[in-house]
Length: 485
Image (cartoon, rainbow, N blue to C red; front, side, top):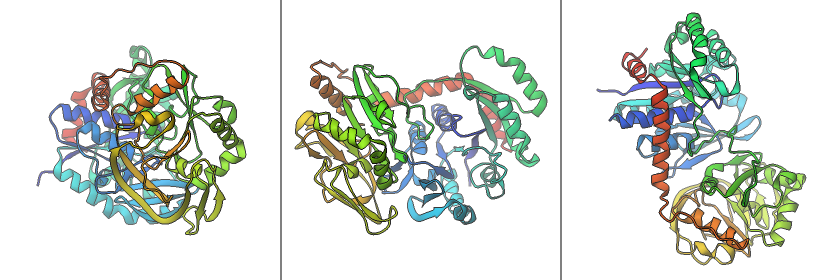
């Protein structure tokens, strides 16, 4: 039986750009006529997605699937860890919640998940020509290597060659690459077939002496130096540069950067307009006086509401709402805006807490998670965002609490809330929101009426692929694919 050829992208640390490089390779291989699928055995992220079947997976593999031109599937991410505390996570296997585990308990348990990983990988390998595999963190975490199921341990299980990526933007890239390789076992080092330097700014020729010396030291070729690339493609890492306060523009939208913020990419469409600033803020001085405030989703609604209460953000949001500033909550943000939050099932540690009192809802948490895709048209909205009525929306819901309303958007005056992730993604929705904010300021906004969200997203994947293709020695990459390990 024919089986796909794998290639794996590992990094010297978190946030070196593995996810986007995998997306680029998925698009390049697709452009070259191959059937390709992404794979990451274990992902730790609070940005997740619900598939057509109502199963939950990490958004990075959704992005990579889009780049590959295929439907997202939990086969591409069989294990998802969603941190609930500094020492524990919700464990999701094959799209279903297995429960919450402390890190120490999960490390003892995770080897039991190898059959699930291999079933998912083998299913993808049967139906594709190439599987692009993403590692996690660094393969040189020597305290974790014995039970590894996501870096070299996985590469060994599926017999995949490895590209090792270093991030020159954070400095010390040669030390990153050399140190990582030095900490690998000889068998693991032999699986690394090439290095890649990512996020370079400037003239790559100045790196030549260093690349030559690195090759002399490790006898592994460099497949390329990828320039720092600005593309409008969703990322999922908590280290994302999107999660910064940034500068204020003509229209200023502030997103509260909650400690356990989830699905922060929900708001990316609002950042595509040059006169609009979309800022992620963590305190009262950063908040300032924005034109709109968004409270995003969170994995820990009760504790994050308490955090806002303690640092003064809640009081400032209540004051802004009283002055007519539009406030919107998504998922956990919607729950916070209600009157009361109760956790009788101990889903979030138990207890009861008063909400912000801006929406006429009460939320009760349970152990059962709602996971569904949804679509429809906005209707019945008043106030500043009545302009949304008649526009289409689509997205998905992921939440542990129920708030007693089936309406896609709940409204009270200038305060709005929804359980739907991706609410701004459909054509015309983000433009309508921004236009309404301009109108409230007595200004006119004329968006490009021909803007097509799907076509724009495809153009960004093509731009990413073009940049990476021109930077990598693709002949070497294909040779690595053919020869394997």
